[in-house]
Each structure stands twice: as structure tokens, then as C-alpha cells.
Image (cartoon, rainbow, N blue to C red; front, side, top):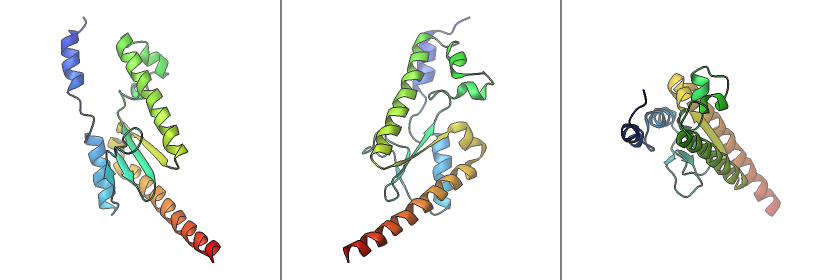
Amino acid sequence: MTRDPAITHKIMSSIKSKNTEPECLLRKALWEKGLRYRVNYKKLPGKPDIVFTKARIAIFCDGDFWHGHNWALRGIPSLEDELATYSHFWREKILRNIDRDNRNNQLLRAAGWTVLRFWESDIRKDTDRCALLVQERYNLKMCQRKVDSVMSKKHQE
């Protein structure tokens, strides 16, 4: 028995793209660690969910279904096997999302940004671990920034 496409459309169009529960969980954990960030930063490719501008870190909280991770959660051997069960529309939509994610990663990295991507299921399972990974990368980048600043001043002397 197949579901009426109008019902599917209504369900899928009601899913939020900003301020999702996983994003809010991660943001709250980062805030509690004293980290301050920008949200849905429109100046960068892909409009990252969380951005640390000084450290040049862009973070995405990717939905398992929308970004092609559902197969791993459901115990299916591969993305291809998962997508084989989807309609043409959803298969193509998810593949386009994955391609867009890869392009945005490349653009950001080429511009000197560090890109961190977290699956919604990983955030839900262990928010603290995800926040700790961000904090470690943030601290590393800020230390490197200080070293670069000192080295630059020495070269100017």
C-alpha cells in the first residue's frame, strides 16, 4: 500500500531546515563550554549551522535521511542498497544533497575554513562528545592563530 503523494509532501515539507533539535542540542552544549558562535551564517557556502568566524570553523548538523546516512542506522549494507528502496524523486534529492555537501566542503576548505559535519543521530546519541570535538578543534585553531600572529610580528621586525 502506497501513501498518497499529497500526504508525503505535507509531512516532508513540515520538516524544519533551521533550528532543528540536533542543532539546538549541539549549540546548547557549545554555549555551556563558553564557546560563542554565529548561526546559519549566510556569507559562507552551504550556510553552515554553526560558525566560529575567528577560528574559521564551519559546522553542519546533517539529518540522517536528507544527507544519506539512513542506511547505516537501519543496518542496510550501503547507501546504494538504501536508495534502491526509494522513489526516483527521493533517490535523486538525497544524491543532490550529498553532492552539494561535497561541493560546499571543497569551497570552504579552499577558502581556508575547517569543516565539521555531524550526523543528527551522533548528536542525539552523544552531544557532549560532539561538543568536545568542536571545542578541541576550536582551541587548536585559536592557538595556531596566536602562533601565526607572533610569527608575523617577528618577521616584520
